[in-house]
Length: 258
Image (cartoon, rainbow, N blue to C red; front, side, top):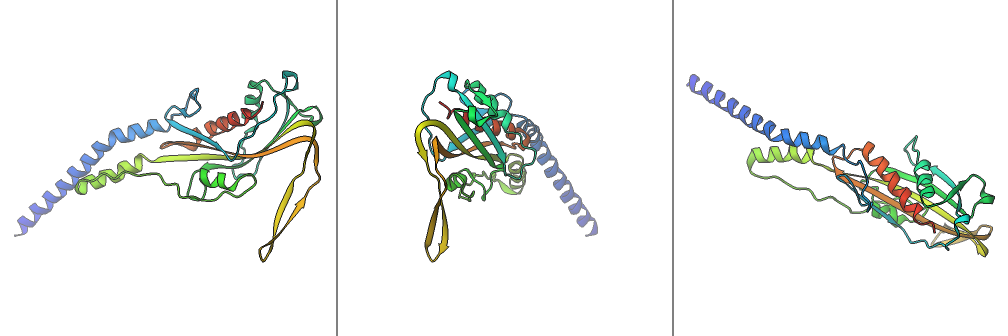
């Protein structure tokens, strides 16, 4: 009886080793491929919708239409701020490069400018249940980033104990990761005869609210918008997504200029 138990235990141990070896064999191409997936993103396509294996998408809370000007009037003052938690973020260079590509001259003197472009980076990082494209756009310019039901579909590999084990590990290796960047912009165009007044509403409780109007701005048309860009790929790393997001946002903002 003792020898029978020993033989059974040995057979069971050998079975576990075979299963483990098979799982490791199945995972070899998975690990190799997932390692390659983190290095994609070199060379954005002309459509701006993909870069390597990284899918890109950009949306705005509203459309802005500016009056066309002659080439000599394409002078813009640029202000870039960052109130996100990402320290050391340099978005100004990408934005200026795109504006120059559109034929604009950059000035540090607002009195010389025919356009003033002010931007504020609100968020750059992972897309989560609390930070989504839909939630960011729903908040609108100056509004909070709110969550929304935006879930990525996941696949399940079945087929017994071995299939479940391998499927779980493969699913962890092939995770769709998404990062997004949210930027508020205020775009002003010098227009003789125009007069813009800004109002700020505040709640007083019991359903009452009051609106405070700031001093009007003469001879300037002012537009406000929010731009959200997203990068998504299998096992995407932030170091790959960040430059793509900055370039995509800068390209979209520069294309608002007439």
